[in-house]
Amino acid sequence: MKAIQIPHYGGADVLQFVDLGRPVPQDGEVLIQVKAASLNPVDSKIRNGYLKDIIPLPLPLVPGWEAAGVVAESRLKGFNSGDEVVTRVPFQRGGAYAEYMIAGDGEVVLKPRELSFVEAATLPIVAGAAYTLLHKMAQVKAGDRVFLLGAGGSVGLYAVQMAKALGATVIGTATGEDVDILLSLGIDQVVDYTVPGYLDTVRDIDLALDFVGGPSQEALMSVVRKNGLLLSTVNPPNADKAAAAGIRASFAMTNLDRGVMEEVLHLAARGEIKGRIGKVLPLAQAAEAQRLMDERAVGGKIVLA
Image (cartoon, rainbow, N blue to C red; front, side, top):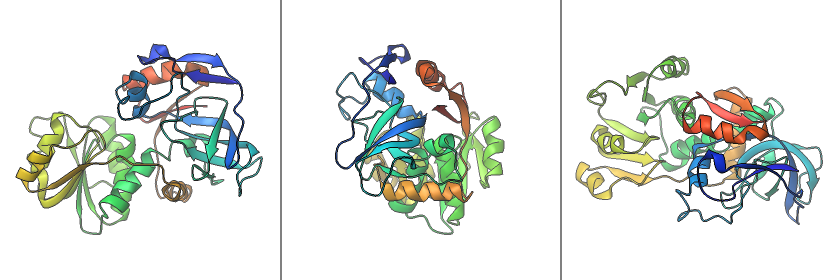
Protein backbone atom coordinates (compact mmCIF):
# COMPACT_ATOMS: atom_id res chain seq x y z
CA MET A 1 0.00 0.00 0.00
CA LYS A 2 1.01 3.63 -0.42
CA ALA A 3 1.76 5.55 2.75
CA ILE A 4 3.57 8.57 4.13
CA GLN A 5 6.39 7.91 6.56
CA ILE A 6 8.47 9.99 8.99
CA PRO A 7 11.95 8.40 8.93
CA HIS A 8 13.43 10.94 11.34
CA TYR A 9 12.48 14.26 12.93
CA GLY A 10 12.62 17.41 10.81
CA GLY A 11 10.71 19.74 8.52
CA ALA A 12 7.97 18.80 6.07
CA ASP A 13 10.59 17.66 3.55
CA VAL A 14 11.41 14.59 5.69
CA LEU A 15 8.03 13.05 4.81
CA GLN A 16 8.46 10.16 2.40
CA PHE A 17 5.88 8.64 0.04
CA VAL A 18 6.58 4.91 0.33
CA ASP A 19 5.26 1.41 -0.35
CA LEU A 20 4.51 -0.61 2.78
CA GLY A 21 2.84 -3.90 3.50
CA ARG A 22 -0.86 -3.70 4.28
CA PRO A 23 -1.46 -3.94 8.06
CA VAL A 24 -3.14 -7.08 9.39
CA PRO A 25 -5.85 -6.60 12.02
CA GLN A 26 -5.62 -8.60 15.22
CA ASP A 27 -8.45 -9.59 17.55
CA GLY A 28 -10.34 -6.47 18.59
CA GLU A 29 -9.20 -4.45 15.57
CA VAL A 30 -10.46 -3.35 12.16
CA LEU A 31 -8.54 -2.66 8.96
CA ILE A 32 -9.81 0.57 7.42
CA GLN A 33 -9.42 1.61 3.79
CA VAL A 34 -8.74 5.29 4.34
CA LYS A 35 -10.84 7.67 2.24
CA ALA A 36 -9.81 10.89 4.00
CA ALA A 37 -7.22 11.78 6.64
CA SER A 38 -7.19 15.16 8.36
CA LEU A 39 -4.14 17.26 9.23
CA ASN A 40 -3.70 18.96 12.60
CA PRO A 41 -1.03 21.34 13.96
CA VAL A 42 0.13 18.58 16.29
CA ASP A 43 1.25 16.65 13.18
CA SER A 44 3.98 19.21 12.59
CA LYS A 45 4.99 19.35 16.25
CA ILE A 46 5.39 15.58 16.32
CA ARG A 47 7.23 15.56 12.96
CA ASN A 48 9.67 18.21 14.18
CA GLY A 49 10.37 16.31 17.39
CA TYR A 50 9.02 19.07 19.62
CA LEU A 51 6.94 16.55 21.56
CA LYS A 52 9.41 13.65 21.62
CA ASP A 53 9.83 13.85 25.40
CA ILE A 54 6.05 13.81 25.91
CA ILE A 55 5.08 11.52 23.02
CA PRO A 56 8.04 9.24 22.24
CA LEU A 57 7.59 7.58 18.86
CA PRO A 58 9.03 4.46 17.25
CA LEU A 59 10.50 5.91 14.05
CA PRO A 60 9.96 5.39 11.18
CA LEU A 61 6.28 6.13 11.69
CA VAL A 62 3.22 6.63 9.51
CA PRO A 63 1.66 9.83 10.91
CA GLY A 64 -1.99 10.84 11.06
CA TRP A 65 -4.35 10.38 13.99
CA GLU A 66 -7.85 10.85 12.55
CA ALA A 67 -9.47 9.51 9.40
CA ALA A 68 -12.66 8.31 7.76
CA GLY A 69 -13.00 5.29 5.53
CA VAL A 70 -14.48 1.87 4.90
CA VAL A 71 -13.87 -1.28 6.93
CA ALA A 72 -11.89 -3.67 4.73
CA GLU A 73 -11.58 -6.41 7.35
CA SER A 74 -13.01 -6.68 10.84
CA ARG A 75 -11.99 -8.63 13.91
CA LEU A 76 -13.87 -6.23 16.17
CA LYS A 77 -17.37 -7.01 17.40
CA GLY A 78 -19.98 -4.60 16.08
CA PHE A 79 -18.17 -3.74 12.85
CA ASN A 80 -18.39 -5.47 9.49
CA SER A 81 -16.63 -5.21 6.15
CA GLY A 82 -18.15 -2.35 4.16
CA ASP A 83 -19.08 -0.24 7.19
CA GLU A 84 -18.30 3.45 6.78
CA VAL A 85 -16.39 4.55 9.86
CA VAL A 86 -14.46 7.36 11.54
CA THR A 87 -11.42 6.84 13.72
CA ARG A 88 -9.09 8.64 16.05
CA VAL A 89 -6.01 6.68 17.11
CA PRO A 90 -3.35 7.34 19.78
CA PHE A 91 -0.44 9.63 18.91
CA GLN A 92 2.00 6.84 19.73
CA ARG A 93 0.63 4.72 16.88
CA GLY A 94 -0.72 6.95 14.11
CA GLY A 95 -1.26 5.42 10.70
CA ALA A 96 -3.85 7.65 8.99
CA TYR A 97 -1.54 8.97 6.24
CA ALA A 98 -1.91 5.71 4.31
CA GLU A 99 -4.24 3.76 2.05
CA TYR A 100 -5.02 1.38 4.94
CA MET A 101 -4.77 1.71 8.71
CA ILE A 102 -5.60 -0.20 11.88
CA ALA A 103 -8.02 0.97 14.56
CA GLY A 104 -8.88 -0.81 17.79
CA ASP A 105 -11.76 -1.03 20.22
CA GLY A 106 -12.80 2.43 21.42
CA GLU A 107 -11.00 4.12 18.53
CA VAL A 108 -13.59 3.70 15.78
CA VAL A 109 -17.26 4.62 15.34
CA LEU A 110 -19.76 4.41 12.52
CA LYS A 111 -19.84 7.45 10.21
CA PRO A 112 -23.20 9.23 9.98
CA ARG A 113 -24.42 8.98 6.40
CA GLU A 114 -25.16 12.72 6.35
CA LEU A 115 -21.42 13.46 6.42
CA SER A 116 -18.92 12.96 3.61
CA PHE A 117 -15.65 11.16 4.33
CA VAL A 118 -13.78 14.47 4.13
CA GLU A 119 -16.17 16.22 6.53
CA ALA A 120 -16.14 13.35 9.02
CA ALA A 121 -12.36 13.03 9.03
CA THR A 122 -11.93 16.61 10.26
CA LEU A 123 -14.07 16.24 13.40
CA PRO A 124 -12.60 13.89 16.04
CA ILE A 125 -9.61 15.93 17.22
CA VAL A 126 -10.66 19.59 16.90
CA ALA A 127 -14.41 19.31 17.50
CA GLY A 128 -13.67 16.70 20.16
CA ALA A 129 -11.29 19.12 21.87
CA ALA A 130 -13.89 21.91 21.87
CA TYR A 131 -16.53 19.58 23.29
CA THR A 132 -14.21 18.28 26.02
CA LEU A 133 -13.11 21.78 27.06
CA LEU A 134 -16.61 23.23 27.26
CA HIS A 135 -18.74 20.31 28.39
CA LYS A 136 -16.40 18.23 30.51
CA MET A 137 -13.61 20.44 31.86
CA ALA A 138 -15.32 23.83 32.23
CA GLN A 139 -18.97 22.68 32.32
CA VAL A 140 -20.10 25.91 30.69
CA LYS A 141 -23.64 26.99 31.48
CA ALA A 142 -26.08 29.62 30.28
CA GLY A 143 -24.98 33.13 31.20
CA ASP A 144 -21.26 32.36 31.36
CA ARG A 145 -18.88 34.73 29.62
CA VAL A 146 -16.42 32.79 27.46
CA PHE A 147 -13.36 34.29 25.80
CA LEU A 148 -11.44 32.48 23.04
CA LEU A 149 -7.88 33.47 22.19
CA GLY A 150 -7.63 32.23 18.61
CA ALA A 151 -11.34 31.96 17.89
CA GLY A 152 -10.78 31.74 14.13
CA GLY A 153 -8.80 28.48 14.33
CA SER A 154 -10.26 25.03 13.82
CA VAL A 155 -10.90 24.33 17.52
CA GLY A 156 -12.05 27.90 18.08
CA LEU A 157 -14.75 27.73 15.41
CA TYR A 158 -16.31 24.69 17.04
CA ALA A 159 -15.91 26.17 20.52
CA VAL A 160 -17.82 29.29 19.48
CA GLN A 161 -20.74 27.23 18.19
CA MET A 162 -20.85 24.91 21.19
CA ALA A 163 -20.56 27.72 23.75
CA LYS A 164 -23.38 29.64 22.08
CA ALA A 165 -25.54 26.50 22.09
CA LEU A 166 -24.95 26.29 25.86
CA GLY A 167 -26.23 29.85 26.28
CA ALA A 168 -22.90 31.56 26.91
CA THR A 169 -21.86 35.02 25.82
CA VAL A 170 -18.87 34.43 23.54
CA ILE A 171 -16.05 36.82 22.73
CA GLY A 172 -13.02 35.88 20.66
CA THR A 173 -9.97 37.17 18.83
CA ALA A 174 -9.64 37.13 15.05
CA THR A 175 -8.80 39.33 12.10
CA GLY A 176 -9.43 39.49 8.35
CA GLU A 177 -11.92 37.10 6.78
CA ASP A 178 -12.18 35.11 10.03
CA VAL A 179 -14.19 37.95 11.55
CA ASP A 180 -17.10 37.50 9.14
CA ILE A 181 -16.99 33.73 9.56
CA LEU A 182 -17.22 34.03 13.34
CA LEU A 183 -20.06 36.55 13.14
CA SER A 184 -21.95 34.18 10.85
CA LEU A 185 -21.61 31.51 13.57
CA GLY A 186 -23.20 33.76 16.17
CA ILE A 187 -20.24 35.02 18.18
CA ASP A 188 -21.22 38.02 20.31
CA GLN A 189 -18.03 40.06 19.87
CA VAL A 190 -14.84 39.77 17.84
CA VAL A 191 -11.68 41.48 19.08
CA ASP A 192 -9.01 42.26 16.47
CA TYR A 193 -5.74 40.94 17.91
CA THR A 194 -3.68 43.11 15.52
CA VAL A 195 -4.81 46.26 17.35
CA PRO A 196 -2.50 47.31 20.24
CA GLY A 197 -4.14 46.81 23.62
CA TYR A 198 -6.81 44.56 22.12
CA LEU A 199 -7.57 42.98 25.51
CA ASP A 200 -8.12 46.28 27.32
CA THR A 201 -11.89 46.26 26.85
CA VAL A 202 -12.40 42.61 27.83
CA ARG A 203 -13.27 41.92 31.48
CA ASP A 204 -15.11 39.57 33.86
CA ILE A 205 -14.58 36.40 31.82
CA ASP A 206 -15.70 33.13 33.44
CA LEU A 207 -13.76 30.90 31.05
CA ALA A 208 -10.82 31.82 28.85
CA LEU A 209 -9.66 29.30 26.26
CA ASP A 210 -6.14 29.77 24.93
CA PHE A 211 -5.48 28.29 21.48
CA VAL A 212 -2.45 30.53 20.82
CA GLY A 213 -0.02 30.40 23.76
CA GLY A 214 3.11 32.51 24.16
CA PRO A 215 3.02 36.03 25.66
CA SER A 216 -0.68 36.37 24.85
CA GLN A 217 -1.48 33.69 27.41
CA GLU A 218 -0.10 35.71 30.31
CA ALA A 219 -1.99 38.80 29.18
CA LEU A 220 -5.14 36.69 29.07
CA MET A 221 -5.02 36.22 32.84
CA SER A 222 -6.02 39.83 33.35
CA VAL A 223 -9.41 39.38 31.67
CA VAL A 224 -10.54 36.40 33.79
CA ARG A 225 -12.65 37.17 36.86
CA LYS A 226 -11.52 36.07 40.32
CA ASN A 227 -11.80 32.29 40.63
CA GLY A 228 -12.47 32.11 36.89
CA LEU A 229 -10.85 29.47 34.71
CA LEU A 230 -8.14 29.61 32.05
CA LEU A 231 -7.53 26.50 29.94
CA SER A 232 -4.73 26.30 27.37
CA THR A 233 -4.37 23.65 24.69
CA VAL A 234 -0.93 25.05 23.72
CA ASN A 235 1.29 25.21 26.80
CA PRO A 236 0.91 25.02 30.59
CA PRO A 237 0.00 28.37 32.20
CA ASN A 238 2.37 29.81 34.80
CA ALA A 239 0.94 28.57 38.10
CA ASP A 240 2.47 31.37 40.19
CA LYS A 241 1.11 34.11 37.92
CA ALA A 242 -2.30 32.47 37.83
CA ALA A 243 -2.35 32.34 41.64
CA ALA A 244 -1.32 35.99 41.84
CA ALA A 245 -4.20 36.86 39.50
CA GLY A 246 -6.60 34.86 41.66
CA ILE A 247 -7.67 32.51 38.87
CA ARG A 248 -7.57 28.80 38.15
CA ALA A 249 -5.43 27.81 35.19
CA SER A 250 -4.33 24.53 33.66
CA PHE A 251 -3.02 22.85 30.54
CA ALA A 252 -5.73 20.92 28.72
CA MET A 253 -4.62 17.87 26.76
CA THR A 254 -7.69 16.20 25.32
CA ASN A 255 -7.51 12.44 24.96
CA LEU A 256 -9.16 9.82 22.80
CA ASP A 257 -12.80 9.39 23.87
CA ARG A 258 -15.19 7.32 21.78
CA GLY A 259 -18.26 8.89 23.38
CA VAL A 260 -17.07 12.41 22.57
CA MET A 261 -16.25 11.35 19.00
CA GLU A 262 -19.78 9.98 18.53
CA GLU A 263 -21.32 13.12 20.02
CA VAL A 264 -19.49 15.59 17.75
CA LEU A 265 -20.17 13.49 14.66
CA HIS A 266 -23.89 13.51 15.40
CA LEU A 267 -23.86 17.24 16.15
CA ALA A 268 -22.32 17.79 12.72
CA ALA A 269 -24.71 15.35 11.05
CA ARG A 270 -27.66 17.33 12.48
CA GLY A 271 -26.13 20.58 11.25
CA GLU A 272 -25.64 21.93 14.78
CA ILE A 273 -21.91 22.50 14.27
CA LYS A 274 -20.10 23.34 11.05
CA GLY A 275 -16.41 23.10 10.25
CA ARG A 276 -14.23 24.83 7.69
CA ILE A 277 -12.39 22.76 5.10
CA GLY A 278 -9.63 24.77 3.48
CA LYS A 279 -7.99 22.39 1.01
CA VAL A 280 -8.08 18.75 -0.08
CA LEU A 281 -4.91 17.18 -1.50
CA PRO A 282 -3.95 13.64 -2.55
CA LEU A 283 -1.93 11.46 -0.16
CA ALA A 284 1.20 11.81 -2.30
CA GLN A 285 1.21 15.56 -1.58
CA ALA A 286 1.31 15.19 2.21
CA ALA A 287 4.59 17.12 2.46
CA GLU A 288 3.06 20.05 0.57
CA ALA A 289 -0.04 19.81 2.74
CA GLN A 290 2.03 20.07 5.91
CA ARG A 291 4.04 22.98 4.49
CA LEU A 292 0.80 24.84 3.79
CA MET A 293 -0.33 24.12 7.34
CA ASP A 294 3.00 25.21 8.84
CA GLU A 295 2.88 28.47 6.88
CA ARG A 296 -0.79 29.02 7.76
CA ALA A 297 -1.36 29.54 4.05
CA VAL A 298 -4.80 27.93 4.13
CA GLY A 299 -7.81 28.94 6.23
CA GLY A 300 -9.57 25.85 7.56
CA LYS A 301 -8.61 22.21 7.79
CA ILE A 302 -6.39 20.50 5.22
CA VAL A 303 -7.37 16.96 4.28
CA LEU A 304 -5.63 14.16 2.39
CA ALA A 305 -8.15 12.31 0.23
